[in-house]
Image 1 (cartoon, one colour):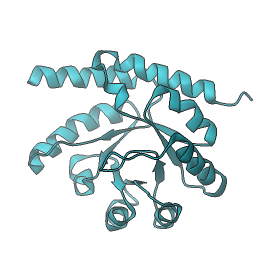
Image 2: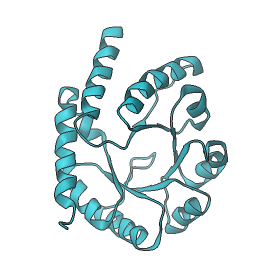
Image 3: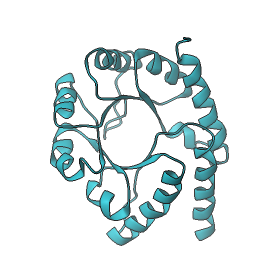
Length: 198
């Protein structure tokens, strides 16, 4: 078991050097609080040493004791309940924003970023066209950074072209852990090709 964990951490460390990664979003399996803090802390050192931020998917109460950089909060109610305990020391990101109004409320409440395009708890995701429309609207009107969630390599360029400041990569990057570095490099190349030529 320890060997498997060490292998995963080594793969992650190599992958973080393969592309310009701004943040790693960590989803935690259920465990007792001490175990979770130890897991987060082990990852935090690797992620932060690479120059990226470690964000927890939910669990904002663990961000400070575990040394994470912040949390990604799903839904406006969850965001509002946690934002004041995170900011300004830590990042408070907002996702799962069903309506434009929810996105605006999150920005007004101090969201460090908003994310569009991730699946909800039931597995529903809007069409790519609808996500692009939301990203374009946000990029035209608001200052807070916008993250477009890409479920495939093919979605990266259109989301970037729509004005997303960052692209979050879905689970496809972990389809083959041995190729994590190569997949991140391919994603970075797609992003580079989407950038306008000066």
